[in-house]
Image (cartoon, rainbow over the protein chains, first blue to last red):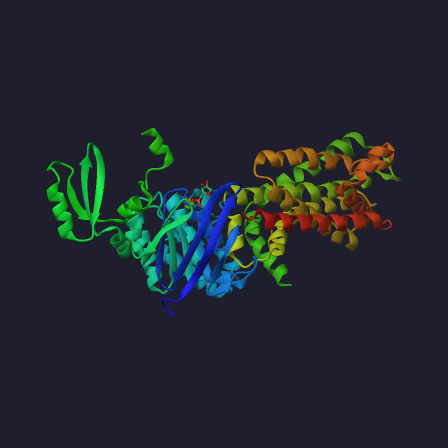
Length: 294
Length: 248
Ligand SMILES: Nc1ncnc2c1ncn2[C@@H]1O[C@H](COP(=O)(O)OP(=O)(O)O)[C@@H](O)[C@H]1O
Ligand SMILES: [Mg+2]
């Protein structure tokens, strides 16, 4: 049923020694949606995905896939999920074709069906000319396409994508967005992590913003923006950029008119970036390093 | 049964690699044993008898035994270590519903394949070189068992090591000394008692003992056979344990 919870996490915690990477995350991902997991580098996105897909055990907390707690490495419910890892995880010293076939074999797909699915996916990704090349000789963008085909070859109903567009040029990024929408319209549930705010805004039905291993807020992009205020007035206060948020246009106008006129004063629609800024008190792109340099 | 089928699935991609690079693989595997044969067999051993046999008949089973170690262990260890730490493709195995035992066995097969091909060639050479050696079913079974044992040792060390440096250390401190010391090219009887006892702890001593009697067609060394099986079970359990622990 569309709208049913297909992945549910409760109180997910992951510690590495004394580093707490994920600090109590609760999530409900609904069937057929594109769920965005948005947060800066180091927020705990990859660690969460690794726990949701059972690639790594949680320190505490539970994960249910399609209503069942997953037990052990060999649980068959794993056949329902596919994942494209952030770091491309292919065997580099064999060919593209062999990597794809290997995934089909690991998922016990009968050879005939595997061949059919492979042909379809390879065609969709434009990989035909590369099939017999060694993976090591492929550029990053093509490797990622191979990884996507590998993740789809067993026709999973839930697809996890860990920062699939990081480091891609604009054109490839848009191509990938189209692909994600297409996979979603086939009925697949998609869980995508990103640190690009516009990506979440563009693609996702619902988004969770996370920071320091905790969920800051969850909702549709529109709900999140409304929770801060639909309109943003941007101005400069003794040199630093300041944003004020207003639920209605009139309020925003009134506030703008009360400001001394000058460059740098503007009214615009609130974005997810503003939501992040407001909820966490800092800029999503401002890593520790950058802030110290300033 | 299904774990066994699954283990073949796991091994499929390593077999693709071996098939494509068979010449390189064979050269790498055969250089060590051929050097031993040349240096000890023809360099030193001409005209010597050992344990009542021609030196060459004595040492070829030893060389076959050391090949089950050298051809299996480091190739598997390197591959597993690389797939875990550099390629991160090892984690993908945790995404399919494969049991730890299937993963461990499947990863050991790549070493076994190398070991079996190399040993087959060396065994054939031995049969041509001396009439003392026989092709016996027990020798074949023992070669397979020994290759599996050291393939499993490779899996364990690949799961334990996080860099080439650690693996090189393991190779220099464990694998290389064993190839010299474990009765492969000389009889242990000539060594002082304390050293003999120490060497008796090492797994390759028992592989050599078993393989030598099987290939020469003498009685079964039951103690060594038991020791071999114990080592195989130990390396298997260690690998499964490390695999479960390595998921972080
Ligand atoms: N294997 C690990 N060992 C120790 N710390 C880790 C490990 N994996 C991740 N971390 C730490 O956990 C935090 C979250 O990392 P990660 O989940 O990769 O973040 P993101 O994917 O959001 O960039 C980081 O501080 C990172 O250093
Ligand atoms: Mg990440």
